[in-house]
Length: 431
Image 1 (tube, one colour):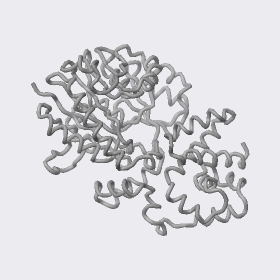
Image 2 (image 1 turned 180 degrees about the horizontal axis):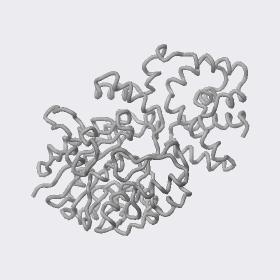
Image 3 (image 1 turned 90 degrees about the horizontal axis):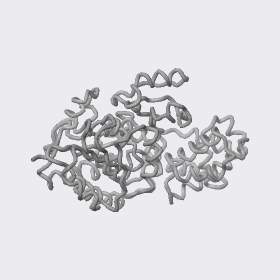
Image 4 (image 1 turned 180 degrees about the vertical axis):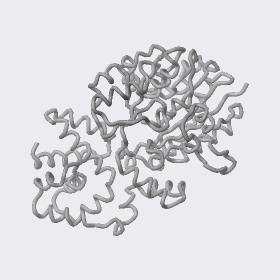
């Protein structure tokens, strides 16, 4: 596609994602279904342009005030994901001059919000949590970049080193993930879904942090286990593989639609120990029948998703503090219900992909106070026992704070660990 029509198409896509009435990935997918004539490179340019605008929305809107023409076109120009020589062919002389002036603006001339590109309520909470201004700046900068492509090797089928050699033979630049024993990190964003290594189920796309949550559960051969909020099943498949395709693994979710998305992935994986179950709510009768019978339960709770802003930058504009407060109540209810499934000696893991303490430490400490029958476990010690390199660096607090022992919680940060932002706490049910 020539530069002018491609920029026009990008402008229309930007207009749609900025409505913020649906998740950006769903909007982009629908847009591509409506424009099937677009090739892979054009789709990549359009998607990256839309996500760039969402990532730097305050900055681009600030710069766009000086330009002329439709607001969405100016935003699309600022975020256009292509060489400048290509973009220049689509611009008028006035637009070229305006863009040059935008490029000349130095970072130190910008207000803080135009540098960190976060809503005020979220920036204030993250600054207070991190304390150090340099740490907040590093986090904000990391959230403005796209996430790396991590895959999990299905170790039921093959060893990681064999899959790595296979991908390298195909010309991929990759390396083992530094912490997860199952992961590989690929350079760039290569398309994998048509490769035989993917279609036979040897790999699944999954962030390294998500892999560590499944690892932390440490499900064993022959056990009864539940992924309480399974969704499309990424962690379910990792847990099933760690059980060596034995035992019984329940994949619970309130959305049949999400569980349907698990079915083709499950078929590729070759796992036969996974049992998807749609439930009405966390107190469903099918849950009650399993009370006190399970060895391990993972609660990857519904959350704000603010740890995934590198992948889902629209979330920072679609979430509010009120939304977080409502989620906290849901998280507490789900965790309490899931805890009833554990037998004495069983392990419970609570996790989110949020950066906010309200959804993380706050929920974990409230649960611990209300459930003395659950003994808190030190996550750093658990990961060290699983031979995770430098396990203590993945946990917080680094020093004792408010009576919380060092290493008590898993705390992954994009700017520190090159993973999505994740939190996890673990307990063992006492007799």
